Length: 285
Ligand code: KIV
Image 1: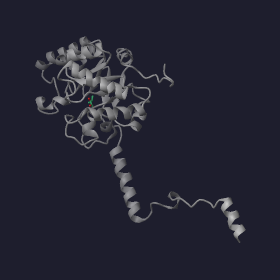
Image 2: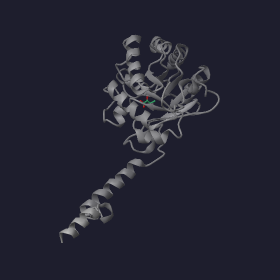
Image 3: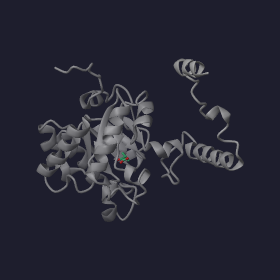
Image 4: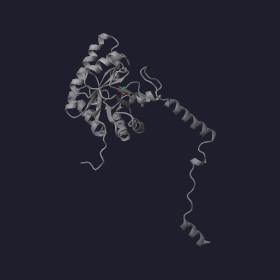
């Protein structure tokens, strides 16, 4: 029994149970304060390996180490208390064997206490998904554009634009669902294909650039906030945070240069003299 009041976070089965009942809302989160805001409105928050590009300036997600995912996973867990938190397994941490995937997924769960992991890949990852879920680790799958495979795909390319590619993607969705995944991210694929997959599988589909018919939606938070310098076509900017940061920092620099900041209200006065010190001073007179 725990001495702390338990926090009732949504779980992977709670997310799975929303299929056909309500639309699933999610965003990526990498940071405690933004996670606390998103937690009020989202069913799950994904600590995506896109943090490598969005926060650390890498050109792809490939260099992201497991330790970075754990560090950001802990920060998001400190900020959010209601949403399910899912941490991405980074490139190289799960592909080699189900055993290695389990070891790394278990490290994520033990150190961050998040409720699930996500990994990229369809049919080829089915054995690993089965192995993890059988051992107590809920897995979210991710098919379509899988950014960890950009070197094979030839870049960040929309998948399934030709009908000939549909069968493989539909098989991927079926395989991960049968292997025990509790949800699947569908990234960058035609709306018609995402709709077919959503109808065919019993688990929720979470779309990002996959149209209107998925069971839920996810976006990279910095992209939808208007902070990322470049965003894909499927992103709607719901904010202008980049411009707001620019204005604020320019204002600060201008005021420091111009001598307007700090003003007197931003400064500290000396402490009032202590009574005892005042008495001693009087006695000495
Ligand atoms: O890493 C990430 O942000 C993701 C989303 C694009 C789903 O995997």
